[in-house]
Image (cartoon, rainbow, N blue to C red; front, side, top):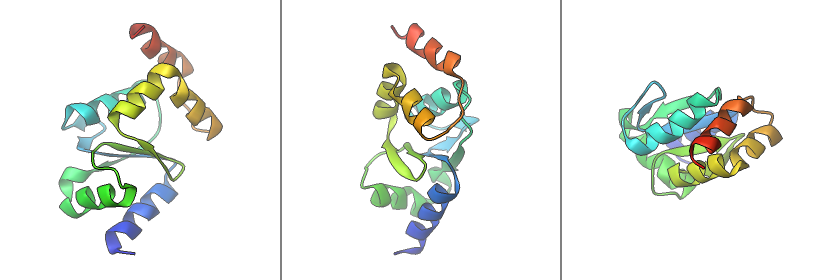
Length: 120
């Protein structure tokens, strides 16, 4: 396994929730990363943000690691969940709540419900 794969594997194993994104949680650098970080920030999830723009090797490495061609990428308890469209759908359907609850990830349920109400 390559050095970047080892680094990615270690990061997703050591953190309950990891978002590989363009920019960081306080200053996303693309609309898709902003949307996913916005959901996680709004519902109060504690997550590790990895800025793929800071390292081209990691930027390509995460795509190879997950066999997923786009950024952002969300991992929960070491498992790849998806990118922007999938996370958005999961947030709106309540699946994201279920995933976090099943994995013991703390989040604001009222805030998650407000996202659904605002998009109904």
